[in-house]
Length: 157
Image (tube, rainbow, N blue to C red):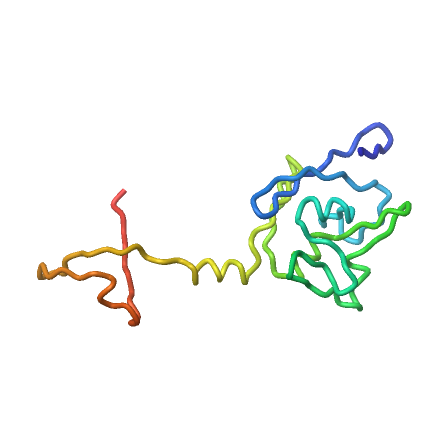
């Protein structure tokens, strides 16, 4: 769906969420969006692009659910011509999710939420290895299991 103003068409937008790109419809120009730099999407496009959907308890995906603050509902929802629009940018701010917008190509990127980013660090495991110390004595990482280990690495390239 493309909305037209005078003689120029507004382009559809692309959302990159969880590494997947989804093209979504552009809102009508007459949508009274409080902040023009925010990304407003239909509830259908919200679900297609992010797998999140609006439920009575909040914006949810699988077992993950974020309640919308009642005092700020107007920052998240607008209804225009019987279509309900959702402010995905405001949602990203709520859940502390980094975003980037490429205005030239009309692409929005949503990075991993803070708790997901921190989970990456907790899930990293060093491979099993054995290396000599400065005196030539061999040490395996497994020798230090249960102890704190600081690994310092570098590359010459």
